Image (cartoon, each protein chain N blue to C red):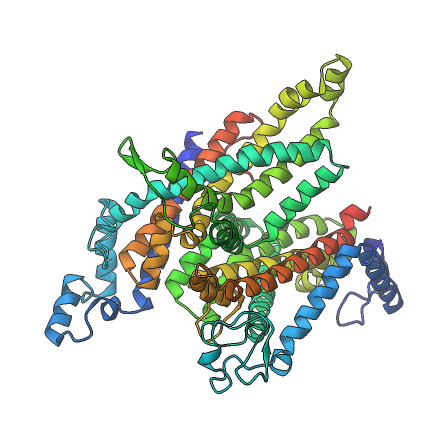
Length: 315
Length: 324
């Protein structure tokens, strides 16, 4: 269907170049949404994910305490069990406190914000860079293409954690450094994915048609071929966000990622790890549960998106 | 075959060179290890002597050249902390990591493949679906968190298994191993289970897909027509056919186990090379970091090469060489 639409509408005046009628797009969106919600598990996943994103964005406004404001925390409240109250019984620590007397619930909300932010940001940057390189390589072809693809193959033959370990051993700690290494770890997936898509797409008639119209190659690439690759890119990047968040948490847990001033969920878990053996399980446990729910819900959404958006399964 | 080998080996040498430059230059800029190693009340003279002893006063290019020359001779420098050859430190800890990785791989093969085949045969039942759910969980749970939960559950709450260390070891061919003593086995179970989780899930998926694909094939119908029992068809004929791809993929993943051992070793204080490198990054023990990375990457290149060669032997349709 999509191909026919594209060929039928050689819209000379539109700047975008892909003039799908708005009415048609609306109905397609509604159609996809309906199909998405046919799966209950995926619907629940999406709801949980939405709640987590909203909660993370609103963390400074809804959390009971600012865990990084030294004035608001009291060392006397340290390592309290979930459900304990402060000395004057004014506040309840629903999920307990850590060794510094910080409210775990607040720490988790702030940590969620950092974990999600790092995961999404690095994935988006990697998506953009990887897509541009992949698209560019596949259109140029020849030596440049095979060189870039060899680099991609080589990088993907090493597990992500090893590449990230090398990079962070070289770069050191810091939020910018962990984002950079997550980008470097991920870009190759997108470059490879888009290249294999482009190789299929460019043989299709709409590309021929666009060539016959004498459109410049850049416009064919970005205006026509790229939009046809987006469903697949959306699916891959959703799943990869979960991977990026898990990798960041792992690296932070190992003490390689985040600085202590910006505690992501992984760092919170690492902080509690020391006290776990002595029975203060909640300092590690609840950030872990938050991380788990986040990753599982993203995976549920990603799996469903793959089913809904994959044109190959639909035919 | 020979041309392929020569090209792959020269390519590997290039990768190692690029890696060594990258790691060396990067690690050079991380920070000054002297500040960590020397006592805070050291006199300037002592400071200067320490710098000279460690060779840190020379220009970076000279340091790299010396490093490269020594590396070719198998000398990757002395650890700043242990004052022993970095290579020796890594090699001393390699058997522990290998023991962990091999145990985890065996667990993945002997638990994952039967479970996956079961899920493929009974794919419409409660059991089949539960196995698949388990494998999805195994894929999405972060390894380190599962490890922590193992410790909370099995060590702290139930007190069944120890939470860290290697336990009693005995020498096997001059290498200390844990799996020959009861105490050592107890120490090995939790970390190996933790490390195996991801690969077990992978083995389940692969063998389930393999069984489902093979059950549709003519040879299975023929075997049924011949009157062979289901056990025989699945246990012998189907099994043989799914083993090649499953084992190949798992073989390729063996390197991943060594890399991921970094996480498991840190959680369970397993004295392998992964824990060593994490500790070394913490104290900026530059030679050990560089040695670990170079050795691991070399191991990877060798594993990838071996898997490619074995694959071409197992499956004659695969040709080594140019894919273009």
